[in-house]
Length: 482
View 1: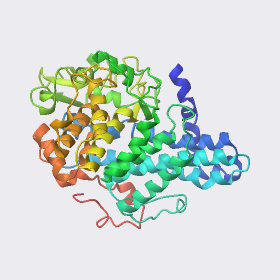
View 2: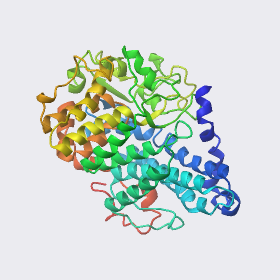
View 3: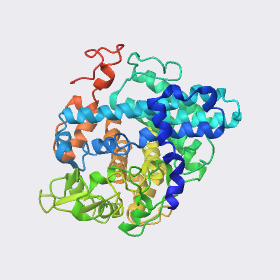
View 4: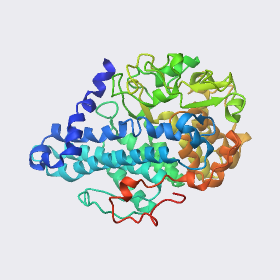
């Protein structure tokens, strides 16, 4: 019930979002965007498409978790783990994600365009809500550009136009950086409630954009600002089950939450990804489970070579025979035995948490310096200590030593740690793509023995766009292989 209170502003806007989709003309600018309450209601409508089962709440992470070096897809996701491209079922799924992301962008554009003209709202509130809308627009475009490369840019300036050319990836990134500059300046130091972005979330997203673009000095410096703010710290764990203090369904917030999509244990308002993880017999998901992803303790090299003393191995995986043999394991990072439905799990989606930031900083600092620094090593060691049940802030026997690594071996060490830490958070494939096709292919080959074809690296532009946007050429603008 306490968690529901944090989510009520988002749940109450479903009707509003439906109006935005079905009857945009019914929301007259002169009567709707005039007060802080009205503008906040419109801002809340941006979150619903992102949280949707067909987007970041379910299909998106389910898709990406079939593209990893530590696990495999099952059923309709099995084909993805062959790394030969998307079949018709999965092409439809990524098309649904595209539609939801652009709906979020459209709803953000409404705020950016209309809020500044409000007649009964302060300039401070206008700046804050526009900054939140731009943060969410930048985040949505960041998801799009990493999975599709260049995409049509729709902003408040052209939001009434249907036919928009495909912009380049560089043009998309320019908009992202511009939006985040506004967000970093005008978002509050402390978010009004858990699930909304602060200026520190904007800095974290900005660091990640720089990181993905291989602008390592900028990524290092922006991440360092967040680290030095002292606003975040890792949650300590002593035993594997303590990771439920971070990922459990009853957690409201933690000291490592930077920006999460928030869910509650309620039908239609929960984190749908949890349904993909489990077998009904395990009782770890109240609604049953699709067991769409699994790993094999003998065949998967990542799992096989993972130190058993690392608490994450036990915390994140459990043995369960799904008809593929006794060495099969399912992921239990997110569990909710009391979830009332497939979209009813109370777990939140950790888009950015402090562990992500520390590992980002460690690699960025190493690359920018052309070798590991003391600060980079400490950032890595904090995450590593926690994984072994140690106090993250205190030197321990499991610490890595600076003298043992050069720039290349340290990069590989951080990548390995990120691979353990972020499992089942839809981050591994994107992380590998950042390093280029050759590195991605080598890591996948080493983990699961599969060869990745180039058409896997980008998703196809969906027919929902190609059929109705006449500025696009279905042959010239489609991504390679589709």
